[in-house]
Image: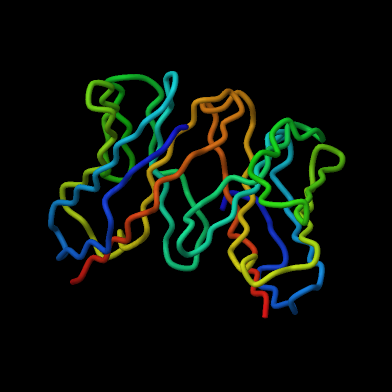
Length: 115
Length: 112
């Protein structure tokens, strides 16, 4: 919604392979978040970026997960050596600060299936 | 830690019925509260929000009032339509970064 683009929309990968998920937020939205939505776990926070720095990485489930952001814009979430439990929808969200005064917009998500 | 509890679904209603989805929270500090909606095949959208006690958020006929004394933020709509069929998430944030803590979501199915 509202201009947050995520790719790929669907990805099927073999266990043990690496995957990259991309998020392209609305221009000027300096706050960027990654969430994971899975059956049984609901919506989980993964990481927060303000500009290019990530002051809160507390939700990354293991060291196989990493994320970066460049130019205060596009962000990439990388999952190394994927496992079946990584299967989920990965959601990106972005907004202008200050939050919560300003709305956070979510993308439609990247559906990851690990087989 | 912070948490959000919302009623389990699915909730099945007939068109024009009254809808209530209960949401309660626990939080340190003073949270801002939100309802998000996820329509089939679409991303999460903000439905309404309230940032302080006694505030009422409203949008598209939905309302929710921030009740600090009961730590609740129940969502209501007086007359639902088939197009309101979706999953509804209650959420809160307590930090200035806007990190959201979500409830488990409630699926609502409205039949003609």
